[in-house]
Length: 411
Ligand code: UDP
Image (cartoon, rainbow, N blue to C red; front, side):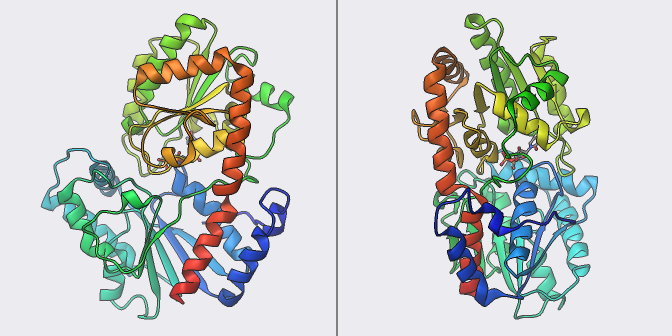
């Protein structure tokens, strides 16, 4: 993947004192190390978002890092989407035919693996069998250290599907997880590391934007800058509960008739169901022109997402399952309170009543949103508290430190 240049020095004004010095000290013994990150999609999800910054910063601290994306097919991505759902707890049918489609494509990718690497980091289940195949076919030398990064909440994983993946995962030298509770008890691995994701405060999505510019951007999408706004930025996926967000918005609208909702979700290449769930959300919207369904197809890119999150009175992330939910930190970093589903990584980021609210259903999402709309000063205070929490725990520099430490330990 082609990447923008990033410079660690540019983060000096944003991060906690001492952070950059610690990063440089950890990076020094790794200078020149060759690191490959491999995932399934170049855009449209949290992993792609993370890698664009992480790999660029690794390069800036002297590491020879690259980000590659595996080659799939519609059939393969349909299977991996089933895997994703199953590992998040859905009841799915898992057949030998699906295993075959999966393994054949991963083998194909393993055979095309090029370059000599000191570390290979495989993200999520889509390419998880890569290590086994690469090793089995002599594609990567024995000295290469392999790390599996799981971004998914496996607390309720479908046992049949997890058992299929477990032997592949256990061949890795280490695995990295967002939360301890995601790590299944049955997993036998010596090195299990907890390192939650992060956001890049200097990315176009998170940079400060002047207010007039924000207003001009949202107006282009028919959003009124001076009326209340709820924003959820998410793929169109049942786990993100876009329909539940529309239902919560409807309840809020009874008290705040001018409230607007933006549901923005890019269509990812490894997410074949996106268009289907978009249509369901469109049906649920029932022609309400204050509900804006937007995506990359209407050129909603990073600047527009930035503007919508920044203008939001309430950022929502009403997920039913969530590995982390970068959108929560993105909203908090912009000083907005976040109403989030009480699940997975959202509970790491929202301190209930401090920087937002954790909610369990449509009614509580609506109630907490209306509470915040009724008390804008309190909402602003909560947003400010959220920004500090993100500054300390969820910026790219913290994650970079975690990874450099791991590479150093494995070296
Ligand atoms: N995103 C985006 N445009 C969209 C929808 C999502 O840029 O229309 C970004 C969003 O801002 C966030 C990432 O994609 O940075 C989604 O990451 P998250 O962890 O919230 O969810 P995931 O998609 O990985 O489940």
